Image (tube, rainbow, N blue to C red):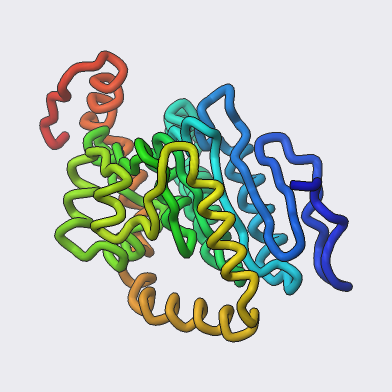
Length: 279
């Protein structure tokens, strides 16, 4: 894979940049974006989310790009949202500033969902919380053996926000969505394939190669009807999404101000069951 080229047609922003936490490469009509905050297991802090959002913004309308692969490291996709950042956010001096701060994750996921090219997540190892929300914002997911998706938010005392619930329900239906979100249990590659979260399950270490095969298949199709199809299907599946998620950041702020949230985080760190009271 050669380094990123200098850009697309006139008026299209270049994809190259001084990225700190992502790697961006292009070969012909396919772009690969890799999370590269390896010292923190690709946990999504503000800087990484800002870079992922900006990359997606630059990719959004690029006519020279037909497929985008999003991947993590060889052993993990992402450990999810950085808990220390969540705790720091509770110390914001005002509620309105806190409300603005919690849009970083939803804005990142929306930016990836709005890329006109087809997006494919290649997942190895664990893909947790916000990392799972990001992967589920892509059009397709390819998972290696041993990979799994997990949402730990509810057992930690939070709601699942990031505007991800409509997409989860659209993929797997209401009952499985409730299981996935409420219980916080890992859903492995085989079950993800069975449920509808994954589009292909491959051998360990083969997810990126399989995603490249998907991207090559997409890149060989006429790009205009592909984009039209993506836009139409997304519009149909998300027709009522805004009505159902417009309050989820306020629900998040409420949940993370509770005693149960503090207990959930403490129990997680102390590796013990939580003792929740509804307070």
